[in-house]
Image (cartoon, rainbow, N blue to C red):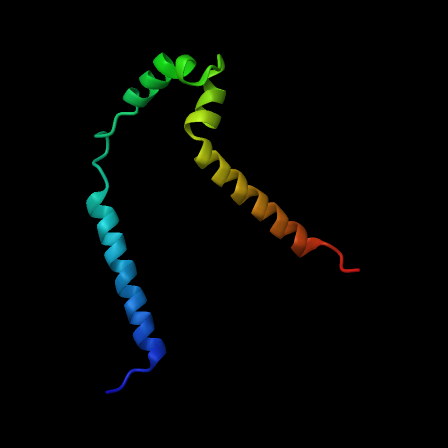
Length: 91
């Protein structure tokens, strides 16, 4: 029995998705095993010295998590631009 290239590609993609999902389930830590208190204590104790900012929330968002924040802003900008381009009136 011969399979078309599309069916073979679909089976490969399904296998990769299945392996990925199984890996995520196996590698996910148990509920309650991760403690965010260590990171929170570090931010509170070292935030002023590391960043020079008295506003701890601002220093966490922009200094410690800067790349993450930049990625989130890029996604929001891209979504807003896409919506604008879809609903604009054509001249």
